[in-house]
Length: 392
Image 1 (cartoon, rainbow, N blue to C red):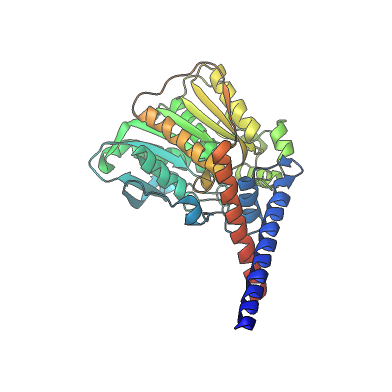
Image 2 (tube, rainbow, N blue to C red; image 1 turned 90 degrees about the vertical axis):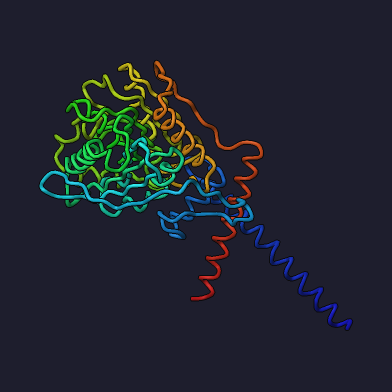
């Protein structure tokens, strides 16, 4: 009996020692991941970037901490999902995903253009489904996300013409899906942010559908060789977008240099930007596209358009895609939804002049929660990596 007690104490001691070593290893790993040439990252940003850049999770997979940490999440209102096809130029059709509330409506319509560098294999409606669905739920709106055709098979202007055809289709057929054509907004992220901005320009220039608001998430706004500090500092690709991808996108989407100066590829360089819908422009600190997004917001304001501009510190390109796990992503999604809700209800306060709001990383108890979740995710990733190693 005495031997058994001694043996059990030894097992507990060894277990505690292993646990302690593992905790130290996790903490050390997070510290290393936070340290970059561009500066020290918040813990959650560092963990998410490490997971993606080391292929520990696919880019389009939600990285979530254990439910014991987050407490789970409540589901939003029930939505109907449909896959439809809309006609575009050249007697072709493209697929378009629709999320809409159950009921008679009529509901506001939001056209969402997904990011992905305009190229096949870098992003599609599926990789952005969580954003599309969440916007529909949070704004009680119909969200339509067209799968515009991509390079290298389709060069400019196919993507924007597809997108504009989808916009016109939504406006013309709104009644058939309980939509309100008088409450029509455009939104998009990265390359999709570029397209959303271009839709506002095209609709103005072509006397197209009246757009009540445009929401641009870390948009690419110019294909021209302009000097931006953020392009120089964050071009390695570690922050989810590299200079090489940007150049490849330009080479295959706009292969002729004459295309680069078009307002429908480079809205930042448009001759004039008068009479455009109120805009929300969200940028990220660690993003090569940060400065050009803010430069576009400033030009919109210079042309007397109403602009709400927010830079989120401590996060990378595409951070709102991770709203389920990053508090800054949730804040960005909330700001986006609030902007669209105000536009839908006619309560959007018009702003004069250019004002850049800088949103700090989570502080106080929110920071503690963020660090706790970062530790939980890092422990999961390291534990899984160890399991995979021993199973080989």
